[in-house]
Length: 219
Image (cartoon, rainbow, N blue to C red; front, side):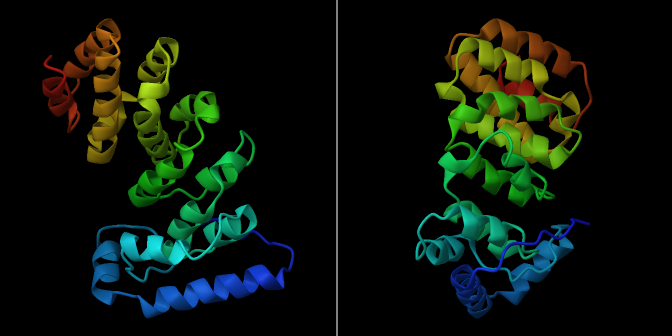
């Protein structure tokens, strides 16, 4: 269970958070929330609000780090997702990124946080480093982040990414698709040798999506 974080009292931010919570509750979809819960999504509360509606709610607020981090630390699916839209990506750094990744505990959060992280490529070295994290969902977020910024990376960075990939992560479809994207980007950028080496190793494993990735790379 996540430890609860406490913030200094700020009446303005508290009012905005209350407004956001009210908008979430008015947009709730019980059937969707139940389906997600049954599918194993780990949230304290889940109102089943669609991503499009959450983006609409977030658009009413300016980017604000303090508001975003408070929303992220509320154990409600919708506040966490809205937080990624309100957060100022340029405010992320090698230290405070841990405030975000420590709360990633399912594939939805991994994929959505990657949209935020990909807007700050100055942290590429940290993203690669986090591919070695013991938490699968943190690695998943980093895989999606790096797949999004792949065309902006140099050959050395891409090689390091591929060498850092945990083969066991290809047992997950979301991770497999991100890995596939990274490998295809490497191919496009002329790094066929490193992708061939990776797919050769992958072809000898029996993970759920190893064959899928190898076929995609024509190996």
